[in-house]
Image (cartoon, rainbow, N blue to C red; front, side, top):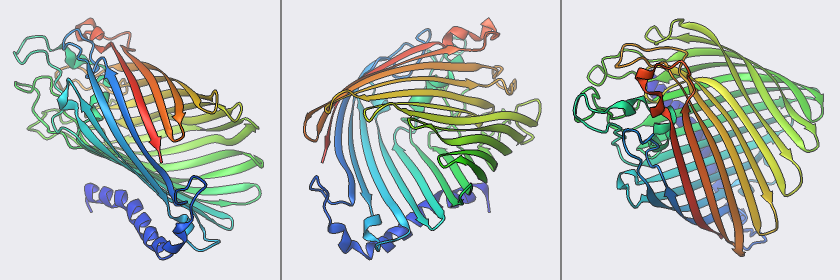
Length: 461
């Protein structure tokens, strides 16, 4: 079986499982007539309509030194429908949740129609418990119906003219890339056996990107500065062992065996034969649970043993790197919470060729100031460090380290029952984090500023 066919089966397995369970639940649909206290059926977990009007001051997130910045108003009309079929099952069923949510969003740009797109999000959660065994399957699928033409960053198609936008920040193209035609799928599956002091948890996860944009030879006009994207995915499986120090806190050890795939470019598109598909084995050590009544933490880290394919643009095909991820949730009161997340991993790039160290720190604060007024504040630090390898087969060395700061603030207010208004602002600042980058590679072109202001209304049925 080819890698492509194997991944299709891997990706469709969670959906098939959910459909089978949905058919089973349908046999008892008479139980779905129960209504909630809000007057809607108990099985209808979410039904809402949102309309947002936003202003983007830098649609392509460029430095402005070459390609000029472009601003545009855009609107988003979103519908969200969610159901839980678990109530249809027999009383005492091992299924605790069987949810399915569908959310289509239509984005329209007033001054940049090439950025228009429609996204379709389908999420499902299946979880249950049988005695000392619990299990869950969480799947998120995204289809973006957008342009199949990716962005072109060249200021001119004349050879020798200003082409320095090719040295742009990694986070420059990551924003418009999400508006292009593509499929994404992510799932996490686990089964946990729990005793008084121990738990054993087999796990599996998938991250899948299928970019449907056209590929062109960017070495000559009319495609100078055009951004080619390749497909990539990461799949792994393993297990965690937990020892309960207290009833709410455990020390953990785990193992993952995984594979990362990156499509190589065809010879007609790019003469560079490098790509960074690899196999990895990961050891994890950490902790999970409550360290105080108001603080819940989860953290794991350890060595990541990598075996890259012979065509990877790195000096050591067998290398050991650091992997870490964690989350801390502080619940100060019923109305206030603070969430911190962290992750660092080696991943394969959507722009092809070289692997990179993907690092993120996020902080989110939420406060229900009154029954009607909500306040949200957020901060992020993102980094894509490509110094793991250096591809000199292309037009320029790939060595770089791109970073971004992000801050956000939002306020929501319930105008009348079911109708909420919101206003928000997000600011991004990208910069070159590799202080040794040669001046000939124009580090200033990796700097950018980007802001989005949003006004919206949401009606929850």
